[in-house]
Image (cartoon, rainbow, N blue to C red; front, top):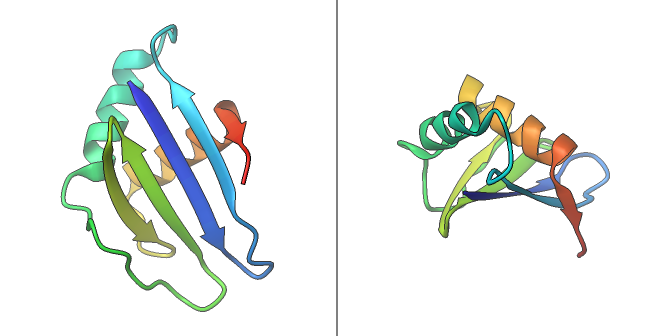
Amino acid sequence: MRIAVTRSGGFAGRTTRAELDTAARIDAPHVHALAREAVVGTSRLRGFGVPDGYHYMITVDNRTVYCADPNLTDSQRELISLVLHQGVELAG
């Protein structure tokens, strides 16, 4: 499973992108469960968060959803953190 996260907004307005491939991960079943929970019931339309808050685009196997701080579920927060910290950072 390929999971990509794009984080934009925040005070500095910097965009960060990262992708995680779960194929060789020992914790793949846990990550897959997080990904399923993170996209269930999440909007496919860009939403609004709070001023200077982060906005996220999460893509799981070609399905893209959007969410924003402070309205993240626990699964979204954990998945976003995992991908941004352990995934491969993408340019631009």
